[in-house]
Image (cartoon, rainbow, N blue to C red; front, top):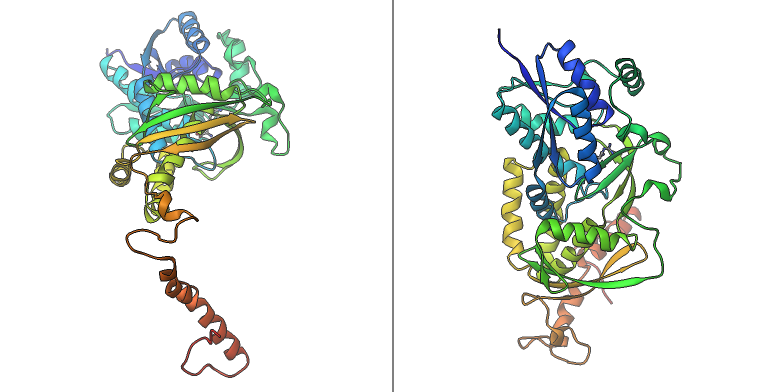
Length: 410
Ligand code: ARG
């Protein structure tokens, strides 16, 4: 008789806890192992996951994926990535978590791999996009058995499952290095105005301000106030510092992949600070056309990021363009933290596409022998087609189609 083992993505919350007996009883597994992946959650979450697995008698594995996740967050900075105002913390963490769990499952000869996601959200899709690339049976008890939160609560009580801790609160919260998201309960009412109690990373803005300096190399933030910092440390520090000025709160009606709209509240002080600083530096070093075109590349990147599909041909192609542009995104940005904002107030770079002399009001020359009066011809042409179109329309409406000639300027 074979011993069938399943690896469960384990958070210690209600959904994943009720999955344990269900995987044995409803799906016939002989053993469940719990895997928790560290993408920067608060330490209490690991304690709780550990206590729960102990109480349930499961083997529990914790994988530290903070560095890998932080590196992906910085790739997102290079792509100025947000989806409907949300910097993608949960979304980007999912493929990292999924890969880590898959490795543990394979290492321990599991035949199945399971998550506790519902059939309504994005995470089921993000996890399974990674897992379905393996031979393991993918199991999603909450979705497949059509479980509701109420049913889970009753079941947990009946079975005396250890679920006190994390699900005691009214909200559903997902935290990692890049963002903290809060949903559920009265927040499900789009008109409900949340109080300060939903926030944990950001303080209500005060009148205080602080300026910080962020150094970038090829689009990656690598230094803070003159000191080099690694990605994890930089993100953690900025969450603290910028969070204390109330930076990085968003309240959005988010369109999920399946089409449902959901009200989400997020906190992401480091993400907002780094994204704003990065864009400020790009505005200095990229050409006008590069900037405009890159917004389209960035949007595609963000959409794939939202879908949890970061390791796909399109993203690799987009990153080819991003890499090419980021070669010059090196320099320093001064950011003022004040009143819930992280506002770039200064930027310098050896690659600045900027000539103070050329743009100045105090010199007649532009640059390279171009004089102000050379713009006269350009000014005459500017808007030509639009003027012509208006005239043609006017004439046609009056029943007198315009003969050859074009708009009379004078
Ligand atoms: N809606 C977001 C996303 O799909 C985040 C969901 C986070 N989950 C939570 N329980 N708050 O990326």
